[in-house]
Image 1 (cartoon, helix red, strand yellow):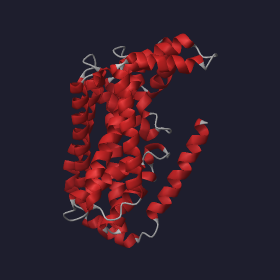
Image 2 (cartoon, one colour; image 1 turned 135 degrees about the vertical axis):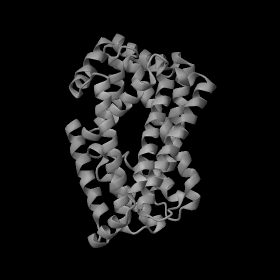
Image 3 (cartoon, one colour; image 1 turned 90 degrees about the vertical axis):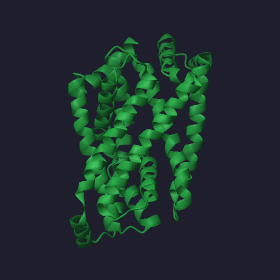
Image 4 (cartoon, one colour; image 1 turned 180 degrees about the horizontal axis):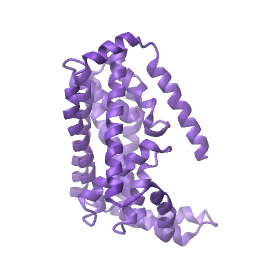
Amino acid sequence: MPKKNLIIGVVISVVCLVLALAGIQWDRAGEALQRADWRYLGPAGAALVGSLLARAVRWRVLLGPRVALADAFSVINIGYLVSNIMPLRLGDPARAVAVGLSGKVKIGAALSTVLTERVLDMLTVVLLLSATLPFVGEAGWTRRAGLIGGMGALAALGLLISFALRPGWGQEVAGWILARMPRANRGWWLGLSDDLLQGLAALSSIRGTAVLLAWSMIVWMLTLGYYQAILSAFVESPPLVAASFLTCSTALGVALPSSPGAMGVFHSVARYALQLPFGVPGETALLVAFASHAFQYVIMCLLGLIGLTRQNLSLAQLRNGAAAGLTKE
């Protein structure tokens, strides 16, 4: 099944890349490239690193004080490195394994914090999209994706908060499922479910949930700032709503299966998110897509390599630690 998913992802990436390059006049693309103001890479880089640091602060709220902020930052970057170079979006589970190998947090608990982060991200993106859509002419599939994603995120967040407030409910659900799986190792799975529920502790209070939502807003405001800076390098005085719509569209679009680093999918979504609603020339929109993707790809990979060094880890250790850590738990 993983091999089949990889093949499907690669096919989708190739198709999307073809769509991204369709109809491009390369002489115009060259002219747009010559006009680019690369000074905007400075603020773009600052916004990108700032968003990663804000993610680390938010994750530490979920993990608890036993994990230092510097370690959370390093491990988050390791996760992005893994997602950028390996298929099947393994960066999130790799994060859980990396922080679990430190012995400060169990892998199961770390997995639930990563899931909570993803739910918060989806909810925040949908809120940002809701504020953006009234100013966008042709939103296309993004409107429908936002509606579905928003409903799913609200339902998921409500479920996670319920389990955080009433861990017994989660244990009952786990027991009900295991009762229908007679061949499963009941003790092991119940232990894992307990670890998962422990990772939801921050959602058990109004203050904790509010802090997480606030940091989620900061994460995505900085992400919006990143795209605004990249867009400004190629478009004179771009409207903030264009950067906001680009932020939401790419965040929703990369949920599609794809090759490592969302190659192709990101570029196609980004190009048409600028070209169709805002009339940005296809060549310029394509350059924005490639520049924003390449810049964050390089920065995140470099930070990920630094993170591996700081944590004294390797990709092989993460792979081996996934099976060994869960078995131990």
